[in-house]
Image (cartoon, rainbow over all chains, first blue to last red; front, side):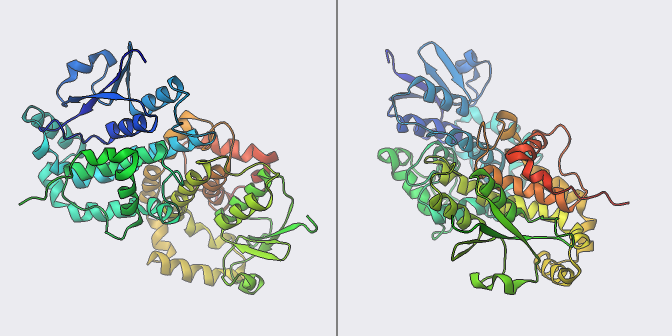
Length: 235
Length: 235
């Protein structure tokens, strides 16, 4: 590498607070491959900074003269561009099965986590992001964040049902990918790192096998994910 | 092998009608490995025939003097006992990721499919199984099968949401496991073979990428899964 990789990484008011589940996929993938990266704090409304990608969401990875967006595309790029580093997917059928885990996380798990934690997010955002966040999320949910917050117990119950297959998988093996983490673990963990960093609500019972795996993922890669503090409990 | 493998395989009134999703996992796994098997038609109430396993459900595979039950245990047994045949899982992390697909299928997909198709099952059962099936399923659902049938449109809508990650995965690759099927495909396909053989209700739109994959799975292994006819439409 002639120049370090750069990652536009969603941040809160405190720029050390990096809370995007999709950015955490990329952070952990880079750590898995041992690739150093400069992470640039980015806020929701800083669309201009990533306009080179033709869209407005992070993660955005800059690798030389290439600007890449979408966490799955970035993972595939890293796998192809750095073949001498540890694989994110392993041999076939690892890549294909990781895609299913990726899609389940994005399309089933994230919406269920969002209903629990999104009401807590405005409090940690930079002031300039708050109006954008509220209006875009209220449009997506079709209700106010306060209304969503009032349904939190029901949302937690729904989330616990969504988590059933993850729970029984992690009751039988230490990581989603087996004895050690691969990209499928990075993807699923992103959802829990998101919740951990933005909301004081506990998603998991202490004796849940998923909770033990979250701790293993917080320890992995030199404790990278622990470098962001958990959300403080409300007074 | 000194003697052929034997599989107790759930059957309807017509013994050619083999409709258990979990038995289909095993049928396809055996075909994947090129292992011949005698499939023995078995009805829900024939608990005595499989009493050697200490439980009352199929698939039950008899391999020499070993009686094995539970589709996942059987798959792991086949992988270990017949290492010279094509792998069901591929190298790590294939086995671990297939377990997640297995758990998602059993704990998320099957319950959603069941709400749609279970009301159609008594009509295809052997007379001796009907009372057992109705009482056990009505207890599990907490309602009559007629009540469940009356909710079919809502159940189909819920199923289509559950299928979102499978749909986007199969829009991007020909099989759940990539370019060719592995055990994860056998597992997920079992749910669709179940629906296909017991119910005239269409779960999928004709242009759904999942429907194209179902056709590929029906063609796989010499068209094994096509040897059972689809459920007839009600008059």
